[in-house]
Image (cartoon, rainbow, N blue to C red; front, side, top):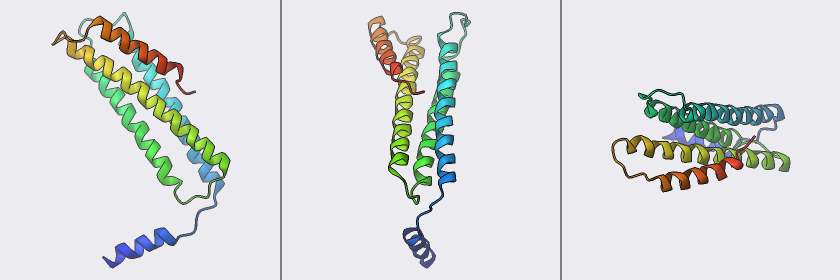
Length: 151
């Protein structure tokens, strides 16, 4: 119990880090992660929307890949904020990190929307509850979101 309080005091009273290179590395790594996630999403999307897929195409594998992309991006997003807790940030750094955060959240929304559409389609093979009107409305929402896709 004492060691926990000592550890907590060390965290609270430790001086802030003044390293700009690691912060720049953190920012560039997160930017690269957003760009890589976008590329992977677009690749998976093109596979799912491809007219050349066979009849036994499994949405489940690709939906799992999208889920993994989401989890990975969210992990990097949290890691970014945990890594900058003790760093003195300039206003430019704060603005850039805020923009990265907004872009990652936008990408998360886009991937979630696409995943939910094709999850419902994969269920539609079992139940016929997903109408063409709902599908077109969901795709329209997705296209509006994708107009704001980062990078």
